[in-house]
Image (cartoon, rainbow over all chains, first blue to last red; front, side):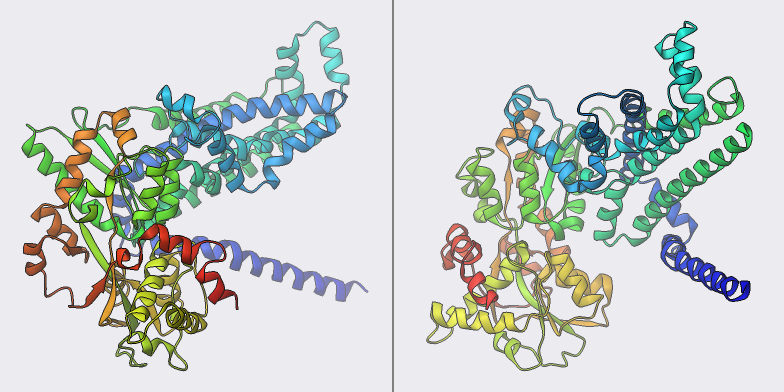
Length: 271
Length: 344
C-alpha cells in the first residue's frame, strides 16, 4: 500500500528539485559565469567605475529609506487593521495590498502625473526649482509605493492571531502605547516583522519597473543597480552588466539566507 | 519568550550591517574636482559610444579654452520618443540629441525651446548624418542589392514597428522615398510597394535594438533594415564574420538633430557650456569622433578625409517627402498609411 505512494513521492521530490535547479539555480550560475568570463580582475574593475559605484550607492540609499519608512508604516497599518474594528477596515486592507497587484509601470506613472513637468504640481515645482521626478526623491517615492505592503502583509496574520489580551493587560498595568508595542506586541511577532523587513529590502533593491519610469536613466545620477544593468547590457558591456547582476543576485540571496537564518533561530529560541 | 525585542548579539549584528550600508549610501560622494559643471545630454539608443567619446573630448576642449574650467557631460540613452517624453515630463536635460527632428519639435511645442531651434546651428542642427542600409547574412546568400530584391519570394525582412521606433520610421520612409522616385512612381505605387514589403516582415519589434537582436541573436530573417552606424557597430561587436552590409543605391539621409533646451539651461545656468558642447560637435575634432563611431560627418573636409569608410550612395531627405509633421500625420498617425497597409 505504502510502496507506490512513496515512489510517487520520490518522483515528485526529484521533479521539484529539477525544476528548482533549472528555473532558479541555473540562471544565477549563468550570470556568475558571464560575469567572470574576462576574469575576476575585469569584473572587480567594472564595479569600481564611478557610474557603477553611484548606482550601488543610490540603490542602498533608496532601500534604506524605503525599509525604514515602510517598516514604521507597515507596523502601524497592521496594528490598526488587526487590533481595531472600524467602518471601512476591509477597504483599508485592500488598499494596503494594492501595490502587489498594480503593475510597477503604473506605480511610476502615478508619480509622473503628480510631479512631472506636465503633471498636477509640475508648474509649481518648476517655478521653485524643485526636482522630484527624474531625481532621487522620485525614485524613493516609486520604491516606497511598490514595497509598502510587505511588512504590513507579513505582520497582519500574526497580529490577528495574537488577539488583544496581552496588550490590554499591559495597558491596565500602566504601560503606554510605545512601551506596549515594543515590549509586548513586537517581541511576539518579531520573526514575522523581520521577515517582512527583509522582503521589503529585497524588493526595494531589485525594483526595476516603477523606478525606470521616474528615473530618466541618467548614469551616475538616477540609475539604480537594476537600471544600470540594463544600460550596460544595451551598451554591449557584457562583463560589467553581468558583474552588476551577479552582485545584485548575491545581495538578494544574502537577504533571503539571513531571513531563514533568523527565522530558524527565533523559532528555536522561543520554543 | 525573551524580554527584549531581540537578543543583544543579534541586534548588534543587524545594526552593524545596517550602519555599514548607511555609511556607504549617504557617505561622502566622490565629486568631480573643484565644482565641475555637469551637462546632461538626453540622447537616443545607438549613440552611447559616440557621446561617451565626444563628452570626454569636449571636457578637455572646454578646459583648454576656459582657463581649466571643468565640465562633465553625462548622457542618458533610450528610444528617441521615450527620451523626448522624459524631457517633456521634467528630465533635466541641458541638451537633447535625438533620433529625429519631430521629437524635438514636440519639446518646442511645449515651450521648452524656441520654435526655430533647427535654424540655430549649421546643417539643420545636424552634426552627423546616417543612412538606412541592409544588414545581410555573410556572403549575402539571397543576393540582396536593392529595394526590389526585398520583395523576392522567400526573403524575410526584419524591421521594428514604426509606430514605436524612430529607427523604424527611417526604414519605412527610406522604402517609401525610393518607391516614389522610381519611373512612374506615385503615392499609389509606393503604398503598394510598402504593402508587399511588410508582407515579408515576420515580426515587428518595438525598438531598433530589439530588431537587431531578433536578426543577430535569434537568427530571424534574411535582411535587417538598420541605421548604418548600428549595422557597422553590430557587425563589429557581434560577429564580423557573420554579416555583410549592403548599401542600397538610393536611400534616405537620416538627420538626427541636436538642440539646447532653453528652459533647462536657464534654470541650471549652463546656457554657454551647452551651446559650446553642441558647437564642438561641428568642429573638425567633433566630426572625426562622429566618423570613428560610423556617423557620417557633415564638414566637407572631414567627409573627404573619411570617404573610404562610408560607401557612396544617393540620398534624399525627409524635407523632400514633406517634412516630419506631414509625414508623421500621413503615415504613422492612427488610420495613416501604415495602418492601412499593415492591418490587411
